Image 1 (tube, one colour):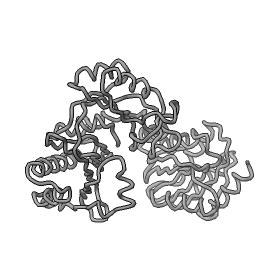
Image 2 (tube, helix red, strand yellow; image 1 turned 60 degrees about the horizontal axis):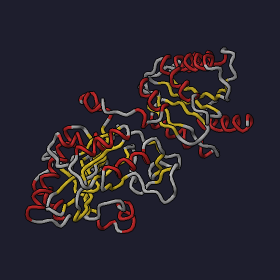
Image 3 (cartoon, rainbow, N blue to C red; image 1 turned 90 degrees about the vertical axis):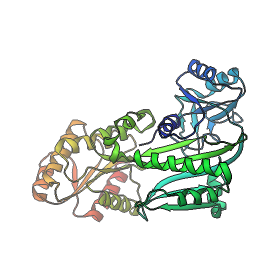
Image 4 (tube, rainbow, N blue to C red; image 1 turned 135 degrees about the horizontal axis):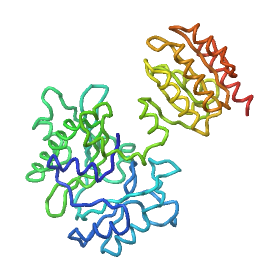
Length: 399
């Protein structure tokens, strides 16, 4: 689960991380009021969307030479002008895609006189099964270019879970950042607090870019991007409450309500499968047959008729879907339950696109009989290869 920058900073503050003062705003008036609470004379107005690259982003509704989603303001009037530019407009960044994201909230923070920018992130390294800390002296908006062009300037420090982040690990980080004396001590303290926040909050990723040294010799977190392990949110109801569904795809939000693993894709063949591995294989074989999947959808191993019906409705709510492939291997999941759900959903939504179903496993004969006797134009397939060929052919025929 992703959260906004201002929310991430609020979480980090509870662990004692040094962060400039700032306030969220949902309107121009709130942005002005937020600025008036800050000492000034320098303010930063930041668009709050779940995507990076805001500083270099462009607003669809503004002139091509207009500033991006992170702006310096030297007066209250400039804060007001920036807020008017941003709120309600669509920000396109390298991470949003061409459609961009509408800006519905801002974060107005105290400005800082920056002497040096650094990069620091923590994430779960699945290869080692440990938390990895990624550190670089080259922080700021061009970190992607640094990673591409000069990867030697980025170092990874792997943390032993048996010991947690040690003084030696923190020193490695400050050495990479080329800090010494009091600055090194401040940075080491910040690194330890960030690690504690990562572990205690069950984060999946924490990115601080930039971590800065100020002109007056302070180490501050100027920007923070955080995502959490959704499987651990039951332990953190306060964090779960930070979810902003307006930043998520509506179909993915609806799927989460039914405990379905759903991700919207760019193709036109909807997929309903049980099991993540089988879902990936299904998408691959659709592409091998010259078409593209419209979604990843895993109904899980023990889905009910109601859950299958909900999954079917979610697939059909995507106007891009021109056909549906259902691929079920019944182990715990029974093929007749799947068939009942498919028939119920197809009748309820007045199915108007081709549907190919491949069933195998527990109660497969019962499932096939339910489909055959449904009175619906359902095409049965013998295996996955046969199913992919048939759905691609059916979609081409219907075009």
